[in-house]
Length: 118
Image (tube, rainbow, N blue to C red; front, side, top):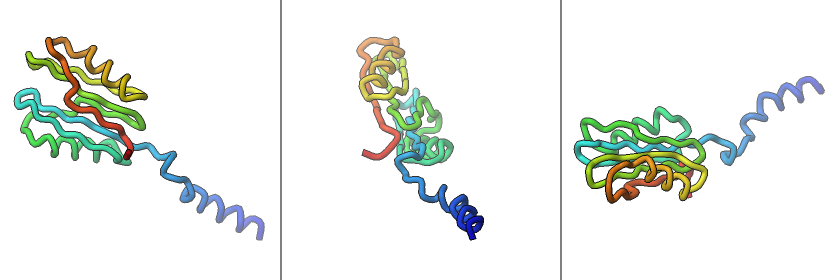
């Protein structure tokens, strides 16, 4: 009887893990030619999040520029078309890093997203 109980717990225990411990992904896609962007969050699989972000960008040259797992990601753009992107543990860190990687003038944050829901 004890062995059956232990075996049942081994099978059931992984199902009891709460979503708090799950990895969630966010992705930002960007089109350098159109300036369009798309983002998504709260995905359990990075590949699914990438496909959705590209679809939301709705541009033929859309590419994934940033992604994060259980953290923030940001996209910064400038007047001359240059862009920078980053991820970080806080919104401020992701924004600051994205802005520092954007080499053009008048850089500003175009998109910022957290991987999980609010």
